[in-house]
Image (cartoon, rainbow, N blue to C red; front, side):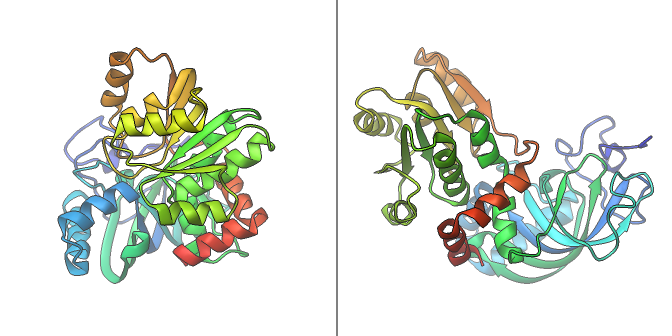
Length: 343
C-alpha cells in the first residue's frame, strides 16, 4: 500500500490540500517511500505561463530567469501565480522509493519526462544553465520529486530530447482530439503552435479524408507553415480575442454550418467566446489552453444560448505519450516542422 500517493505530506501549512492547489510545497530531501527523485535537466514552461512571464519581464532574458527562480524559491514548485499553470521537465532518475509504482521498473540514470504539471511537482533549482525563450525552456541543474500518482514517459531513443519534450509537453491535446474527431466532421483548431499542429495532424488522421479541417491563428506565417504540411484544408487569419470576427470567418468557411468540433489551443486569454460561437449547436468545444477562464466559458455559453458540450482538456488521456510520439514518427513533415522550431 502506498502511504502518500498524492504528496499531501509535501504541502506546507495547509493540511488536506492537494499539492496543485497548495500555496507552497516542501521539496527538501531525503526522499520519502512513495516518491521518485529526479535530477532535473530541463524545464519546459507552459505557453501561457511563459508568455505572461516574458511580457512582465519586458522580454529581458535575465529577468525571465530571475522570475522563474523566484517563483520556485518562494513556492517550492514552478506554478505561475498569475496563470496558475506550470509546465513539465526532463531529467534522470536518481532514486526510486520502495513504495513508488516505478520501483523495480526504473533505475538510477534512466531518462524521463514528467507528464504531470510543474504546478504540483516539488522542485529545487540550483543553477540555470541556459534559456531558450523561443521554445519556453530553461536548462537547469536541480532536483524534483514525483509522487506515486504522477505520470511520466521514458524518453525515446529514436527522437532528440528537445523534440520529444516539445511534443510530450502537450501530448494530452492530440490524444483528446483522437477521442472526439470522426470522419465527416467540420473541425477547427484555434492556435497554430505545437499543440495546435499536433491536434491538426491527429484530426486529419481521424477524419480519414472526409470532412473539413480549419486552422485559425493571428499569425499568417504560422498558418502558412501548417498549410504547407498539409495539416488543414483552409487557414483563417483571425484574432481569437475577437469572438464575432472569428465566428464570421468560420461561418463563411463552412457555408454557415459552423463546426462540429472546435479545439482551443490558444496561449492568450479571452478566447472562450470565439471557441463557443464557432461551434454549432449540439457540437463540442475542447479547451486545451491553460489561459482559459472556465467561468467565462460557462457563463458565456449560457449568455448566448449556445447548446454545446464543453470539454476541459486536463492534459491526461491514457496512452497520450505513445500516441503523440507515434504521430511524429509516422508524419515526416510534422517531425521536420517540430525539429525546425524546437530542437
